[in-house]
Image (tube, rainbow, N blue to C red; front, side):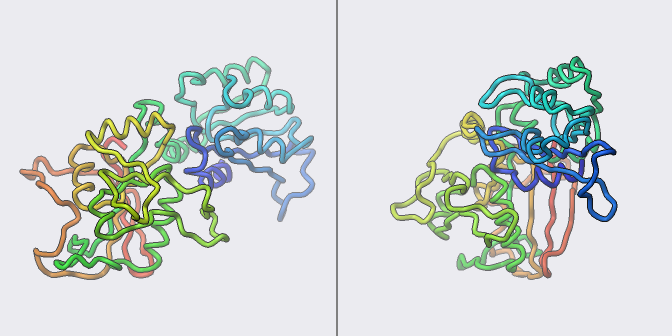
Length: 339
């Protein structure tokens, strides 16, 4: 299942409105030539872009005849309905799979247990709940979208250790180092859309594209970039164009992005936009890059531009998912209490 999780992670942000799913076929014990270092052979697959094959079908095709009587590991319950592609349950039955191991049940009402029921009615052994916590987290964006219709919101922030994002004169490039910036491009690669305020567009003129080396596993070509969303209006000739220009209530904007099949969006700033998403409780995951640097005063620009929590009792408290070092910078990942 961890191999299936790893396969799914590489296609995050490329499969929407479908979830990023990974699958692995392990042939029956008597059909194991080709393994490495004594381990059984296995054939992995991941969900293709919308309209393409689902992870189960990709893995089954890779395994070919060796799938018969084998075991299929898949992070999400296989679909049992006709959409853009035929039901995965049909492909699993036709391949002669003996056992299916599932991470989590699909929350989509069109599936939600139907896939499991159809596999069992075909005489296939089904186990569910394998690596449940890991799969649940990996598919948190998909689960939220199916529950609320809105995308999962990731807020990216980069600052000094005293919480400042720019000098009093407005200069801000670069506070963090190259490794942190590379990691931020990985975040972009996992998103369906990147959101930024019009003020940031005017001051920084960002491109908001994913710029990674072709050898990087998260590399995205020029035709597979996330949608760029400007809150407000970008000036003519801005590097971010073409972009969606949106204004109004942030919840309504998220509803619109969700209706377009976007499962995950990355909010990149600036400080007013960050404050607005935070203050309205719209952020699911925070990623902070903290440089070992101090402005040492109160006139440098803060992470959030807007009123703070009025009392200690109103303080926002999340949960730390991870803390890591990126060549000297600190990366802190937080989930909202409901995340």
